[in-house]
Structures are given as C-alpha cells and as structure tokens.
Length: 121
Image (cartoon, rainbow, N blue to C red; front, top):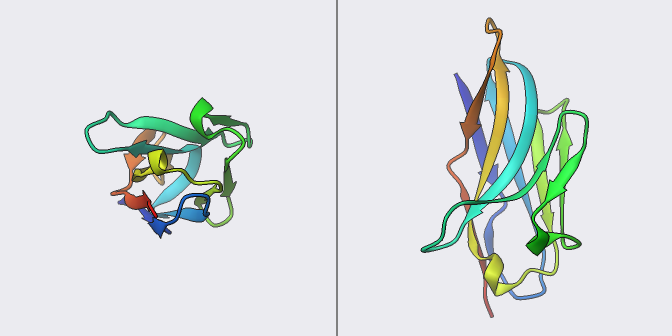
C-alpha cells in the first residue's frame, strides 16, 4: 500500500507565499518522477511543476520564476514553494509520483487527494 498526503494549503492574500508538502509512505522501493498538478474550478487538471529522480525540474510557464519544486529523497517528500501568489493560482493542488513498490519490478503512478490553495484579498 502506498499513500501520498499533501499539506500546506490555505488562504493567502495576493503576493503572499505558501509551501506545499507531499509525503509518500508505504511499501516503497524507489520513487521516480514527482510532480505537482492543480485543478481550478471548471478547468482541467494541469501540470504545475515536476522533478526527476535526478533533480531536473520543469515548470508551467504561468509559474516560472514564482514557484520552486524540490524533493527530499531520504524522506520521500516533494515540496512546492509558491511565492508571488495570484488569484489565478487558486486551485486544488495534487501531488503525483511514480513509485516502485517493494516486491515489484515496475513503477505505478499515484495521486494524492489534494490540498486547496485560495488566493484572495
């Protein structure tokens, strides 16, 4: 069994900052890609940022220069530091990872349940 649990969401004023965390737990042998997606009301889920097992990062154009993704492989965690938040960043943010479970030889893709970020004055 593998679980992803996000935390750190909340209400913040425009221009403010939040740090999201995602903890992976369970029978984990290895974690590959880790990423953050978001889904705003009435919109499709979209990639915000991702990071490879080697540390290579990729960002959506809308968040470049404002958001930073990082990971702690020893703790099986991924983070999203969000600065300069805008009302259009309001969404449910989801953690997504590729995990190889103990006793398995191939990875599977997992999603967390999401954490709500609301940017409003």
